[in-house]
Length: 112
Length: 108
Image 1 (cartoon, chains in turn orange, cyan):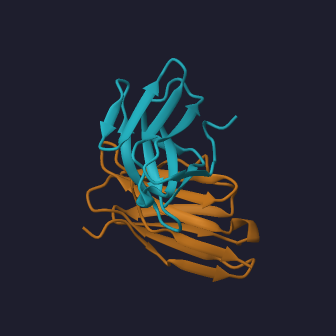
Image 2 (cartoon, each protein chain N blue to C red):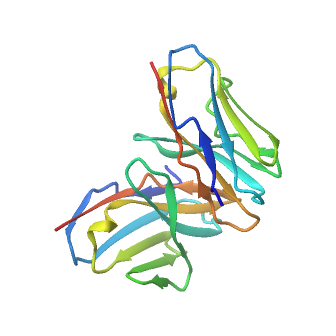
């Protein structure tokens, strides 16, 4: 099993640009989670999906952030327009019906 | 108030020492509890679940006090490889809520 796959591993972009982060969950896992990690705030849950349906997006910071899960094997997190305060590590995690989150390696985003 | 609170540390201990981390959570309806480990510039990984009766996995012992809303992790006979950040995690309504972590540094 390849685990949760995220891309890109690193992203450097200019303020105002659109950024798209990608995630492929573990096959058979029915829940997918997007987290953001910073030194100041730790790991924050942004949004999660259950069976491809968004269940709770209360952690999405503002309208500049959006997430989709068009099928069971792919999800995107988009930031448009990006701002320097969005700089963080973004993790995707997936889980089967019972608990047991497996995290991807993360995308380190720097907005300059 | 944060949902999950931990002492950020760092805890600097010599090899062979015993070290304990504590964590408190605010939601009394929380359903399940975990400790995750995160190495520098890596993703978090599940270390162990925490059960009401307390549970042990080798050198690691986890305990839960629901009345006080308090979770602990004890590491005996610390190894250099135990150096990492330990995250206290609470399951609220099928969402894992993470503490900001306690950093442990084990020195020779």
